[in-house]
Length: 343
Ligand code: DAH
Image (cartoon, rainbow, N blue to C red; front, side, top):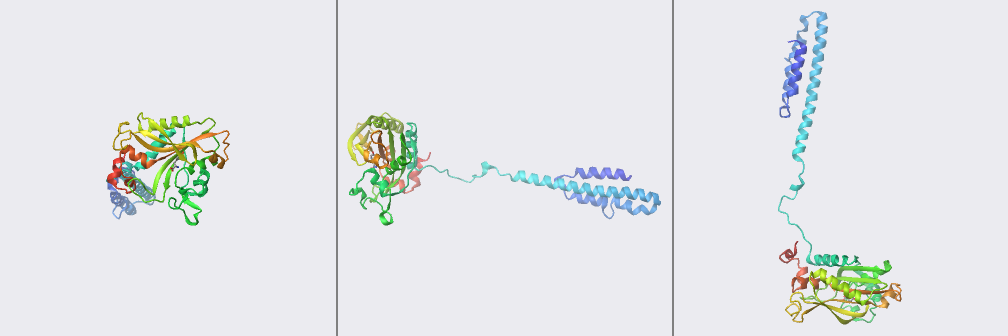
């Protein structure tokens, strides 16, 4: 076999080595370049040749030697890369397998779901949704809403005052109206959902922390009729039923005239049942036309603009909608209760 034939055969053998035979490469190298390797033997036998032949054969044997060395190294690099690639493919993260262990999907709290439902209903009526701070000062929570200093709502019996009596935890979402009007000029159409605080003992229908949604619409031609139409449309959206509304005269400092809104009981459709205590009606919110003193507090022109406002209790609406009879269930985080609302 001449040198170039040896070279050809060696090259072919090197190329045939696969990733699983990486150590074979070293054996191959030994076969050709080791102590008794084919090329080594040729180099060893040079003494039998003439000077001229020695030069020629020696040069080409050395050339083949370095070619084989290079080919072996190249093949090694190539195979190592292929092995790495194979490994990477195998270890590639499959996102669908990330939560392969038993994983429970979370869900919105029923109070949050009601706030979302209320918001959706009002958004379709052109209202935007704003938020106000839970820590308020006396001015936003009372003064600007025409609630006089002597009013019992300001009493520490009802209000959680913070250190120094300068700030307090809002007792209702109505100060949300004030924040919006101070930032924005009419027309205004907004609802403000949020958590409120009252310094009172809790029982089946009272909690010191609960949620309200405040509503406000101010413009040039806002009337009590607009208020009635808006609330009727909201009730239709929210309960997905045709229900009558009843407006009873009432009193709030920040509205004049003021009204309490009852909706026809959606359990008995007004016939009388346990939920509506046989009256056929359910009290759901307070409302009225914005008092001129409130407009004055936020520098709105009360000759030019009128507005209506309303406020509803989220827990109360949720309890009515699902026939829940104890408000404390919302705050106990009992999964047996909460799971009934997971969607
Ligand atoms: N802020 C009142 C409350 O906490 C609810 C309310 C009544 C809000 C009448 C209003 C309203 O905007 O017009 O009981």
